[in-house]
Length: 140
Image 1 (tube, helix red, strand yellow):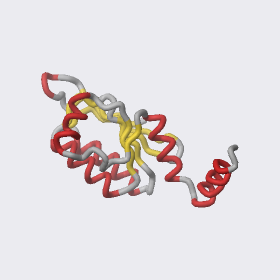
Image 2 (cartoon, helix red, strand yellow):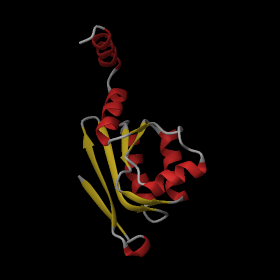
Image 3 (cartoon, rainbow, N blue to C red):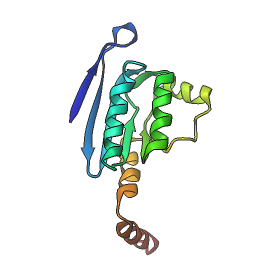
Image 4 (tube, rainbow, N blue to C red):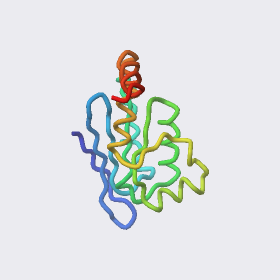
């Protein structure tokens, strides 16, 4: 796991960004405020995963504040590769999504575990997806 410390956010709250691989998926976990100072290391982690053709799960469950820099990052990631948001998101982050009208634009999951399942399915080769589809349709 890689962790990058970011200068303290509003009110001196600590924050950092952790990045690790879970199977074929890269998981990025920002903690604290995601603003103009914190967005670049998150973008770098996501871009690295996309460069390696890996899907990304961005776990927002520990983000306490997000501004337009965070929104810009999410919109970029959504258009750049296979990308899932994991929650649950904090009230302030949900308010940003509500006010800006981006609800429904992102592929989201209620938990990191659910997002990892979605991302792993997206990363699976076509043969594995077909086999899983057949198993599911046969009730196995």
